[in-house]
Image (cartoon, rainbow, N blue to C red; front, top):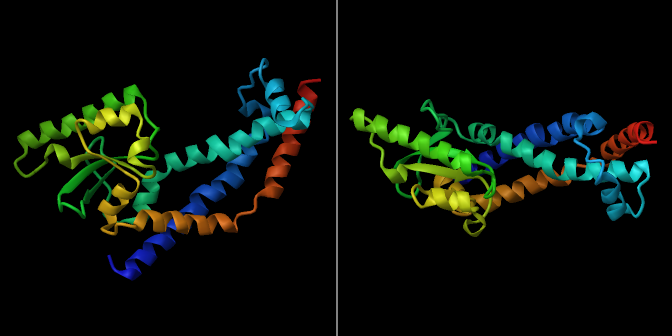
Length: 236
């Protein structure tokens, strides 16, 4: 990878984060978070959560206890997870796959082999059923390779690529996959698809530059205010 190619990739990543993550959070997630109907409110817990966080259970405190975890935790994490394939497709042309059950195909910069890859966002993002689904997809490719002499696929060519995290953070479900098929996580994943060992950390820094641009305090305050009014009307 040339220096200019590295810079171009990082600029595309910043564009992706601005358009797909930040704008989605501001325009869509805040709008949804302002409506009480969007929450599965546990009547036994919502006052406890408000008191735990704010020391009282007035409508404003309840609203904050609901909004902050939604917008600063689950919402943006879910948005990122749903868009990782979009991220890769915007960064790299020709990585798309027509193989059933495979998200991307790429040539591994370390061993030169073509990899058939399922993409995942983080090291704790699958459950038991997901493992079986992945095994099924990979077995389908193995079966196809047995009947197609033009398809040269080894067990190490069927991989799971995890966009962020460390090997030590992999859940037991990922570890189970890794006992049969390679799981590339974080730095290792980005090294293999770009050929640059430190690209993962370059990418984190680039996204951090976009984060500095964001000031959502006014929109966050408006979201809390609207939800507070709805709570006041419904929980008198």
